[in-house]
Amino acid sequence: MRRKWTTVSALACCLTVLCGLVAACGGAEGVSGGVALRFSWWGNEGRAKATEKAIAAFRRTHPGITVQTSFSSYEPYKQKLATQAAGGDAPDVMQLDYRQISQYAGSGILLDLAKRPELRRDQMDPALLRTGQLGGVQYAVPMARGTQAIAYDSTLWAKAGAAEPAATWTWDDWAAAWRKVAAATGKAGSTDPGYSEDWFEVWLRGKGKALYDGGGIAFTDEDLAEFWQWCTTLRREGAVSSARQTTQMDGALDNTPMGRGNAVSDPSWDAASSGYKSLVGDSVRIAPMPVGPDGKPGQYFKPAMLIGVSARSPHPAEAAMLIDFLLNDPGAGEVLGVSRGIPVNDGVRAKVDPGLKGFDRRIADLQKGLEGRLAPPPPAPPKGDNTLQSTFQRDYDQVSFERMSPLEAARDYLTEAAAELKQ
Image 1 (cartoon, rainbow, N blue to C red):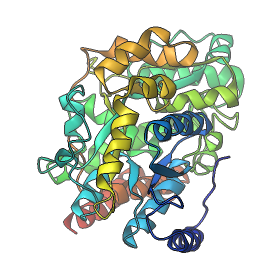
Image 2 (cartoon, rainbow, N blue to C red):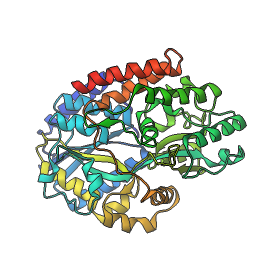
Image 3 (tube, rainbow, N blue to C red):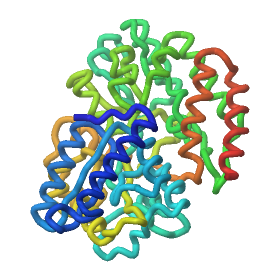
């Protein structure tokens, strides 16, 4: 069952209860006298089932180690982890987004994994490994390879008479399709992409630009205003979701406009898009993100997520052993499949790929079609980016409700970003 966390205070309360229970069991030691690890991640029910099955396999081969697990959707997870970390009680093993690396590594919360011989990294892509580094220190390792994608309902798409999405489609090509789908179905052609820094980054990179240059912002207010004005035009036409629909999003797929049945497509992540099957059905397909006006792809391969160890964990060796098992054990690879994205270990990926079926096959085929076309991933964003994601969405809310113009909101965002990045 997915665990819902609605407020920081509720999280802190639950954390207090959990700490009390752990203390009652004798600190970090399990009831049998062995080692007890806490492992937290975000994801959907499918990922949770696969993870629990892999952990059960780990415990069979490591009988002296128990693993207490916790998961939720992304936004509640992010808030809970921040609360735990601020209180000095981060879990032993934690799933991380690459936008969190600078925040947690810079605060001394993460362990240097290069110093843990229990964790093998020799069969991982060096470019992906670098996204878990800060100042040359390996604070986290990628769990899988993922990329941005557009999920869409192929049945409604075809009924609307829209052409099959192509890897060469520009943002304007997609906009034309969204207008056609909206006119034919009465639903928005897509979730409004203006709310997310992730999709703005793809837009920027398609124009040869970037979010960050070292520790500072690398784009102008005119760049952001252009993106938000483009989104505003589509929203006013009904081609993308309304402000009321977009602002109800909380990180869970069932609260996206597409998940609620109010839109036909959604900018998302390839592995996460599998969650739409339970909401939309088997007609869900994924396509590459739009390219820039000259055909330059803006998307990139990134760690679908990373995993790290708390610097305060009393059991760093066992924590590293758990990570090594999840990422490098062939049996664990078969159990986990592509629940977090394509396996990051070359050998595991080669073993898993032939057996992929259904939506997992679609994810693998999408990534194979992009190999050799994408620029390397950017370095981990500077400390402060995690906060700026919320600022970005808040400022766009003002635009989508017509309370600020795109340029006014863009200037406000850049002012706050400059202050945040100086801290």
